[in-house]
Image 1 (cartoon, one colour):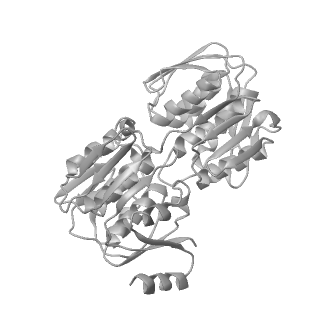
Image 2 (cartoon, helix red, strand yellow):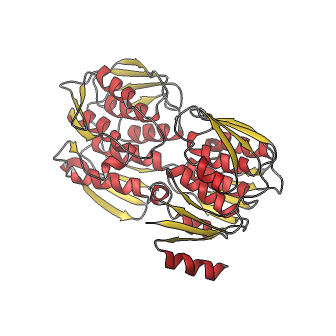
Image 3 (spheres, helix red, strand yellow):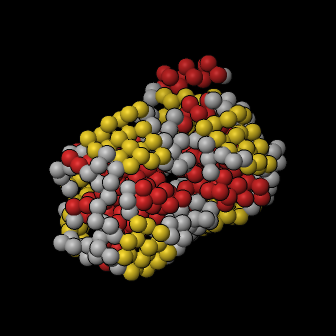
Length: 430
């Protein structure tokens, strides 16, 4: 079992380079299927979700040329199969992006129902609603989503809920449909804009990405391109909160500060010093931080993917804070683990009431999902003594070289897989 072991107490200090946005990259890689020409993607994060999706695309017959760790060229003109069903693809949520791209390109797609983190129900009904509006017949059969269309025609549709995945999926399918598609109540997240920009660089005609109304004029064909992915907003936010939690001084580089405004605002409310530069943000934690309240919302609101990280920070703030989760109903699974470390958090429905404590103590805890796992690591870095985080496979899905980047800031942390290594780490750092 992969684990992180760490000794807490060191303020994190220094600079950290942020990689490409995982959530944008997943949609962008799937979009490469919309053309027979080569598509080269740069600033690609080297994380497990990305590598699983690349493997799934390769199994369709596409040729994947890994130029280097962060750059890949996809040759999808050789795709022979529109059926994607392997044991790996079921583990990641973004497998559904292959539905939109394959339906748009080949008018047929069969993709295994997606998995990913167990943070509550994430139905794909809005995806299916969009495909049906474009003229596809869609059904779920033997654990597969099967979509088929003789013709795809533009449609005017209103999303019942704001859904990043459905917005991206419908944009991809609509790019090669006949006529105009209008998506109202569309998601406005930065990675929606990034996928739209990639599609436009391939010859699509998409306007309004980043607003709640997106207009897609279908084109007859698309062409190859070279494209660089935006920085990862959530990775950046995680290191920003790492500075607050450990009372450190961290500069996160290669970011777009505009994408981080909701995170920056909460850090300032808590008493941190935040300095913004053109492509970097510096966060200085303070000895005493103050309570605040936060509610997760679609962009530009506070991201649900940052909810566990801010909860750890609020645990170490003076006073009582409230965290309201409005996106996913099962995103407080980490609270029991954090309480084992000495936090005082009570969950009532979709609200966590957090009583600030002076300090946390090390414990053996289990990562229940990607972002909560990262948050438990940050808690361990602030705690007294040693902390062991189990099931870091979740963290490796979305953070590239997480332990290495933390070590670069002064953290005492290692990835291990047995008790002997844990004992060696304790003897070395104790």
